[in-house]
Image (cartoon, one colour):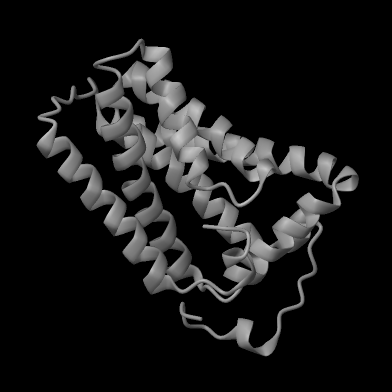
Length: 208
């Protein structure tokens, strides 16, 4: 998504279609590379809980950093404002759908396929780094956002490499995205944004 695109309202259908496409690409990649995936030991719910907690903490830290940095960066304030304008019309069901599709599609592509495949030919740290750079590049609507998603990718990638848990990676990504969208659409004051919405943004459907 480019910085120009983020100035426009995003539609639920276009986002879901894109994320499903990433998931299909990941499955095809795994199939045609004959990638053998290891499974995590232990209860899946333990990893889901750990991922949810990690995602919540990560987003909380991101908010604290933004609240500190926004006073020094007009471009960062402008970017967050544009992102809010693009997603403010989404209702709770749309937010849940977007967060779930993004977590499944992107983690399947960048961690389960890309990182695991690269790990066969490069050191583990290199596989994490390369997959995280690719992940960040896919979200590079600005330098600041690239840096944020790079750090997030490195954290999730490291956790995935250590645990082999797809559930951990997906739940971490889901909780981070869900909280991000929830705050942007329902509690913008947390990010020093105006709570004002135009009439079109108050619609209860999930489409632009």
